[in-house]
Amino acid sequence: MIVSRHSAFIDAETLQQMHNELTNSANWMFRNKFWRYYVATGLAPYKEQDESTWYGNQDAMQSVRDPWKTLFKQVYKLAGPDFKLMRYALTGQTQGQEQELHRDTSLALKGTFRSYLLYLNTSWDQSWGGLTDFVVDGKLVHQEIPEPGKLVEFDSQVLHVGHAPKHPEFLRLSLVLHGRLTA
Image (cartoon, rainbow, N blue to C red; front, side, top):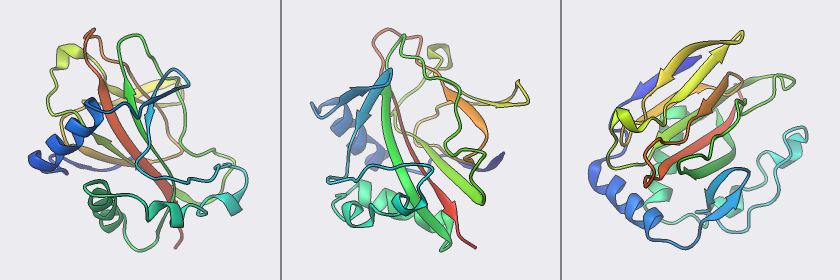
């Protein structure tokens, strides 16, 4: 389920730079109960059941600028040469914007899939909530605290949910990259 965990995966200066961009930008779009932010332009639609769409955005990923490009490369280095990015999601949640329990990749798909979840807030207090729950066989088996700059690598086919913060004036920021291990 949880493959690895890396505290301070993003250094404080880079995290602050990303946080400043995200909290001072009008580029957010509201989609499916929470906010989305795009760091790549020209992304083609992704269809989970159509493998031909999984890796079609490699050209669009070239449009990613720093510090995001450097961060993606850092994740790719951790993931190894067999990791092929299928998609990414940079999301923000405020109080009351609850996600649904979900898998990043359907159980119907064969292969090994990984998700790399990064928490992009510069500060966090446990009383604010915003935990990520992992569920197996209908039971909560693990929770992650959204510590600033932490990366959690996990099996994309495990049920999970990122909860909205309880703090009324706080934006919970996270980036997830998920893809397939081809070897």
